[in-house]
Image (cartoon, rainbow, N blue to C red; front, side, top):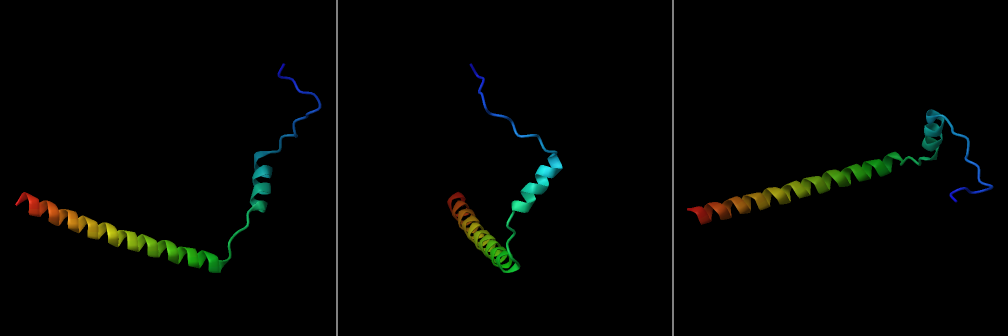
Length: 68
């Protein structure tokens, strides 16, 4: 029932040969792209940190106002 005819499995390569073949397929970004993306990540992280700090300050102020 589960048998198929005419299909053969590919010979199993060693793990490291397969790994080497996959690494050859990778397209590495150039230095300009990496620099731009790094700056973008740092800027967004800093902006998000500032937003979270402001929200934290507002929530603390609001809670202290309600408790007193």
